[in-house]
Image (cartoon, rainbow, N blue to C red):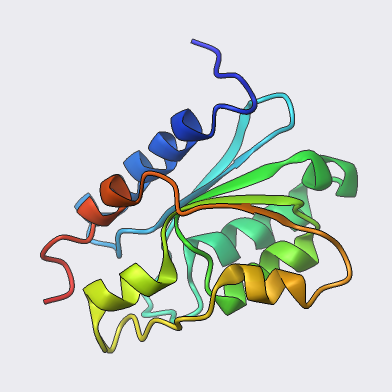
Length: 160
């Protein structure tokens, strides 16, 4: 089944499914996917905190590293990154530097912070990604939170 390039809910559900898979595999329940301008899923990435306890191994940051190495500037500019949770400042910066022009996220940083509290493995920054992108010289469209209640489910019982 082909998904229309602008069917944000369908692509978000793919990202949320990947976050569930990450949790099932013992990782933190975060994931990101990169979708081409034609609606093709180009890459998926789970949180990479495990096995080495890499605090910078956020799904979005790792995905942007892979994408910036493997794709052209034109492909990156046309692509959309879908993330199970709002990109933190580090991940928003990675998306900006990679050249992504659209980010769609599920769970907001504010709600994630309420869920995780001050968990040592996820000391969430309540800093909207829009604030990070607005400081840049190129425009990055942000859509979200989208399907936030669904996005929160992967975190139920995880951080307590």
